[in-house]
Structures are given as structure tokens and as C-alpha cells.
Image (cartoon, rainbow, N blue to C red; front, side, top):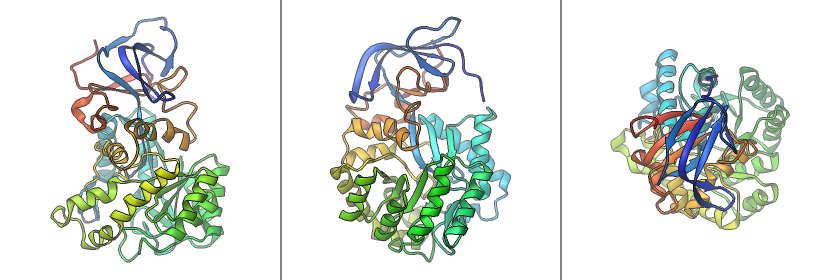
Length: 404
């Protein structure tokens, strides 16, 4: 891992207080050995002038696919593409994601375990990018959603258990299970459940034994409920939530990662962007229900965490902040939308005691903004508003011409 500079001072900025849900300051924020500290550390260091600016925790995207560019015709574009070229593309996508202020992501599926290899390359300091919790392959039923590219097929509890263990052996930092059909795989219906509760439970047990979170791609109502009962940590998408499903999520503390960006961008791109017709047809059936389910869940008090499903059509790396804007536009306040991409996301990933806050002892990940995101949430998605990105106590991206 790249050694952090011994001492970095973020001087005079307004700092987001995750508990109070507002900015405090101006005050100095100090980093030493990759952590936020209470007092200046000994030794030489750098100073980043933040007067009049806004410091927020490093942003977290709980659902990405960094091997995908988000092109409308991604599947045909990458068909037959050499693994090395896919890896080089993923490296660029990781860099763009970091420049957008996202210092931690969970990658929920990639061909050939490329997400795991990418995570290792970043951790070893070979390339720049966010910290990655990579799932390797997702695990799906035979012919299920994702089987064409990013998932390993399995049937029955024992085979699901084995498939999860394979991902753990490969170095997975998270596990993904497919509980229903989806929009992007031809020939499957997003309204149809896939794995049974028993199959999902076997996968969740293996993930939790290894202290990994278990995410469920779950769009169909019955698939959502099967996944919640099986003990998953998060429901990804949650397009058709009913009252019983929401009640189960509240009872069990299951998070919703709504991925509102995915259907929004498919709808905006349309056929002109090269998006296949079957995706457009299915997306038309889901988009209104998707937003309505999210709003109902938020009103009921379901825990939410931000995730873009980056890599779906027109859902490009480096544009991840649009999910936070959509979450605010459709029901959260700007402050709670920011929490969904910082403290709440960290808690869902089991990292709430060391990430997602600008507090003493936490890993020193932060984004310095020129505009107040609580007054205008679009600042979080505006590259021109990002003055600097700090990861592990180092300034890894600057927009204003150098350290002062």
C-alpha cells in the first residue's frame, strides 16, 4: 500500500458533522499516518487551504462494476476484448471514480475476477483508485440474471455454498447473490424470483462466516422477501417492495441500495445511445415502480445506502455523484442523502467504526468542495466543485493548482 504522508492539515474549512447533519467550523482538520487526529502531529507535512470551502467524508458507492464503461452498447463493445485491455480500461474507470470523490466502492461483479485483481493493484499502490470491496463473480441460478458475464451459475444450497467459497478463495471482500431476474440480461424477467430462500441462506451463511457482507440483487417482490429472510445485509435495487417486504427490512435492519441512477440513465439514453431494445423495453416497465418503491421505503424509515450500479448503460465511472442527487430529489434531505453515501454506507459495509466520518481516529478520506452541498446538493456531482480529494491522508486529486 502507498505510504501516506506523515502530516496533512486541511486548514479552515467548514466540516460536515455526521451526527448533527450540518457543517461546523471553520476549523482545521488534521491527518497523520492516514487517520484523522485531534492535534497536529510532529514532523513536516503539507497544508491545504480550505477557507470558505466544505469538507465532507470520502464518498462511498456501494454498487459499481468498474470493468464497464457505461457505454450504451457495452456488451457488444467488449465481446471478445482481451483481458488485458479490460484491465487497463478498469484502471481508468477507477481513477475517474476517485477523482469524483469516491474513496471507497463495493464492486458487485466482474468477468474473470478482474475486480479482485483491481482491488489488489490499488491496495498495493500500483495504480490510483478507491479502496475496493470486490465480490469477484456474483452467484446466480442456472440461466439467471448476470450469467452471461459477471456471475457464476449454481443450483441448490450446497452448490451455492461452494460458489461463494470460490469467491472467498479468490479474495472477495464482499459477496453478491442474485435473488431475482433483472433488466440487463436477455431472456429473464425482473419480476421473477430466482434463488430460493434456502439457497440464499446458504450463501449468506458462508459470507457472514468469513466476515463479508452479502448483497442481493433483488427486484421481484418474492425474491426481495426471500433474500431478507435469508439474512442478506442489503437489497440492491428493490424495484417491487410491498408492505410485507418493507416490514421485514425494518424488523431485520436490512439496507436498501436503490441504484436510482441505473433506470434513470437508461431512460435518458434511449435507443440513440445504442442501448439494446430488450433493455429499453424492460426499463420502461420498471422505472416508475422503482422510484415509487424507494420513496415508500424512505417514508417508512428503511435504512438506505448509496449505490449507482455504475457500468449499466450511460452510467459512467466518475459520474457517481448523480445517485446522491437523485436520492435527494426523490425523498431524502440533502444531509441524509450525504449520509447515505458516507456514514450510513460505511455502517452497512461493516466499516462504520473507521470510515464515513471526519472524526478523530477515522481513516482520513475526505472531499473538499467549493460549494455547500446542503444548500445545493448538485455540488456533490459537479466536477468543478471538487477542489480536492484526500485518501488515506494523501491529496490524490486537485482542481486548484497545487498544495498550499
